[in-house]
Length: 140
Image (tube, rainbow, N blue to C red):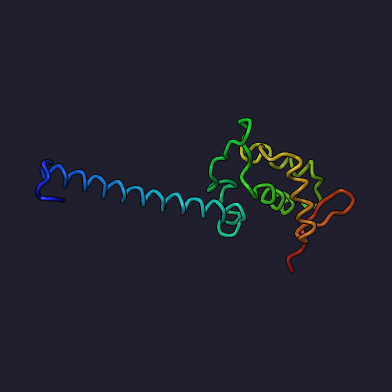
C-alpha cells in the first residue's frame, strides 16, 4: 500500500483482507472437491469402501452430455456386474442389467455398456462365459 494514495488505509486493508479470505475459502473448497473426486473414483472401483458402503454413496452426480442425456459414472457397469455375479453366478447380460433396477444411477447404464464391460472383462480374465451365462473368474 502506498502512503501517497488518496484511498484511506482502512479501505485498502479491508480490500486486502477480503481478497485473502476469498483465496483461503477457494483453496479450501478446491481441497474438498478434490477429495470427493478421489473418493468417488476409489469407491467406483470398490477398492476402499467395499461391500459395506451403499452402492453409489460417494459418486458424483452424472454429467449431461450432448443432447442433454446424462451418463452413468465411468466404471459403474463393472461394479454392477461384479456385485451381481458375486451374489448370483451364471447370469445372462439381461439378468445382470436387471440387477441395476431400483438405483437411479445404475439404471442409466445402457445394455451395450454392460455387454462391452463383459467383453473387456473376458479379455482381462475377470469374467468367463459359458453358454451365454457369465461368471466371475476365481481370484485364487
